Length: 413
Image (cartoon, rainbow, N blue to C red):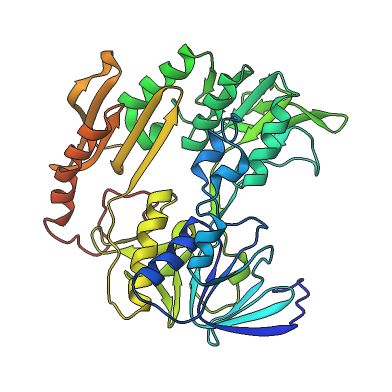
């Protein structure tokens, strides 16, 4: 890539090269071995850590309930059983799609099949380089740095009211700090949960002492002597803070693929089998693939998608012709509440409580759109939510969506 000095000391060849030692990357390796793939497999990771789980970072790791090593997805002996070469601390710098070769600063890794699993990078706010007290949370190192800063802070502001921002706000509040959550949506996770449930989530946070300053955008940060002092809103109000966490979404890690010949548009664009080009696949947060059930190209950012998509990619590498047509699913734990969502909630969906009672803190909501079930949500009722999920399965499999049609899925375009 322009501006990058690449020194190719060696060329390594594998049957399959997985770029990204993430949950999606490791799941691809495991699925390949389960399906009988016996050739050489290399797992290339940008971080120095063995594959670890990201969902606990904003909860168990940030709260100090878990040590860092507990996030490992597999013990070293289990990784050894996979007979995979793991190369860590070596970010991919460029891809030659025709040769299926990936270059790092020290080597070229070539393969019969390349699986791109490079994930996403958090979006940030403009701020001076090295400004103390400002954090994002994506990696294990991010979580540990934020956790260390919590011991020195008194007032925190979380910029972002999506799932990650809401989880971080809940965890920090439980550590005893004053916490304000801000962002343009009228309630936490409003676009993901709809008005009924996001309103309840707002009350949950407020009842637990989180100050909500929502429905307004953020214009920047204030600082003094190299440390953050507050968050400036578009109303010119400033929320004082000595700790700021920015959780305003992420962009897929595709910069290293510019000039590779692959189609890049809000991710690596793939067909319904997650194939980006001959012998090249994408999986996890970085993949934008054609979902045959909704007739659109979509990208999902969640743990469940990473694992399920990896299985389809592995099957296609070993000779299958599977299309990936999942029902989107995510969960979030905030305070003592567990929320599970199957499908995707849209603004035009009609929400109906079909089990339990919101007054009791245990209920299931069904979201209907255009006469069909679009999503199911459980609030502290995981079993009942799974039972309602079957109606969503029936709705999605009744008939294929027309090309370009809308469907119950996030990040569709």
